[in-house]
Length: 330
Image 1: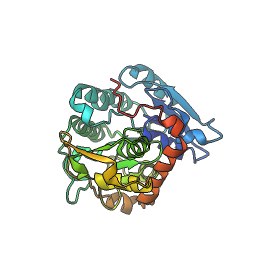
Image 2: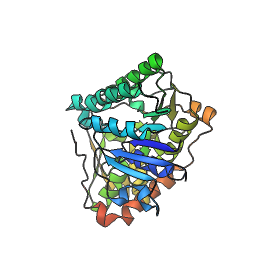
Image 3: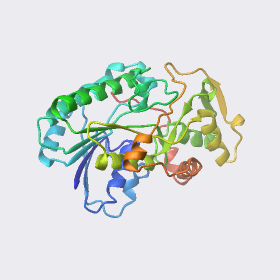
Image 4: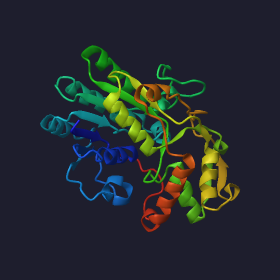
């Protein structure tokens, strides 16, 4: 796959996947995002000496679809990987139409064009286990969707749409649902980097519902390796889960960051009301990817926490100048 288009290349997961692709000296990457490239300390690939095989294009799927389609038709990538999405849960309650516009409607227009072309050979769609709703027990790729938020509903709708195009036209889609991704360079409002930042600022971290909700945290590089394995060796039309072996409560995640920074969690948190539609657990089964593709997560959670804290510390002068809250862009 010498030429790969990555939609949403400025996203946390997208930038790491771009960096992984550049490990292959034969690869050529079209990095596409609706915003300008982020500052260098947010983009792992910027640390490389040679970026001649990477070209960046600022295009918005909602407003620049004609230009995006023209670019793809001109470049004819061998594969397309789509990270582009409105991905925050809580704000989706306020403007659900905007989440559907990006995650479903724009995707429908793009895929309806691509299904008439003789490229790409593979289309990797980045979905979310939030589409399952409450993930308890054994949640496999065959578990029915039962979304609890507008964001989750928009992702479930997108997945169903792609499945329809695969069944009717043989569209070469592969789908990945990964659990809670974390690591250095993540958006600063996410719980792990935010905890490190708040500890340094002397601010208390809000634990919604006391932090009892259970998540499955997996390092972004483990996810990128899994996504590449699916892109190369997955079965077209199939969905693959990428997840660790178990879950961890949010309170314990915050506690791990506090411990790394030499603080007691009781001195750093406050309990607030739970978010609307918050599911009690996100724990999914990844046996399919492990057995079919030989993938499994390798980065220890403690090591990953240390990486995030060290990244915040090393870039503190720049980090503290960045917005610390989510800013919605329609």
